[in-house]
Image (cartoon, rainbow, N blue to C red; front, side, top):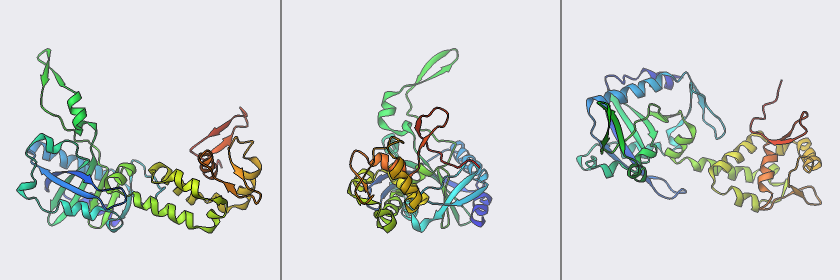
Amino acid sequence: MAELNELKAFNYTDSSVVLWTFKVNGAANENPRYSARWVDTDDGVKSTLRSIASTQAAIIEETLEYSLTTQNNEGSALTLSTELTHAGLLMASAAEQPENRKIKKVAELQNSAFYAMKFIHEEQTVFAIRKTGSGWKTKRANDLRRVFYIDEKLSLDEQTPFEIEKTIDLFILNDTVFLRQKNRSESVLRYKQAHLDDFSSLQAEPEFAEIFSNLTALVAYIGKNKMQLRRAAAIRQKAHYKDEGFMDRLREEHENQKLKIAFDDTGKIIATEDNVADIMTALLDHRLSSVFSQSVYDVQDTQPVE
């Protein structure tokens, strides 16, 4: 909690603040290349940025250690070390504020992937980061015309709008990243590699590999898809594949549960392109039947009822 207390106690009111915008290059399996540019802001915008960051930090009441499957709520944040992310690269790209990286025309703002509010007070620095919305995209801006109701009539405003959200996706302070919005934060930090590593570890587990005749179709299905990688992480966390009773019941009941799963003569799962989705549903324990309607459902919440 020491890091959280430090984040909440930071003096946003008296800090200097600079708004940085970022574009990201590089393949998904490479280190991201952050292209950062800063934009001049008036006192009203600076005051708004300070208010947003201090308000968002204040509502964090607890921290949870980050994992691929852990989710936080409105009053909490997930934390992990900057060393486990690309946060160092992100901060380094906004370490200096040279004149040649100042934004001087609208086109340099458009299509930014995210923006960062960089606060500095008494040699302490906080980054508050938010992924951009559709209003920052060139196509969206070209498709819209802003109109305002002024003096009992609608008037056009040809200025290009850029939205500053009232929420923060993540904070960075010292060596700690505070994730408020997990999915968007992972996107900003290009944190998919953690999911890929976890799936590789799952494949290497003898207890997991041994329930299949071949893992080829499963690996191809999951690939680098973030949603499927997250589901694979949940399968590993639940570890039903290690439970012999669970696996025996899956072999006995898969047809009754309308799961298209095939087994070889030794009881191993035969994974194919057509049945991998059902295999994952089964290993997640997301296929359940109702004793009331006698219907079979796919569900997300499998929390046991006490």
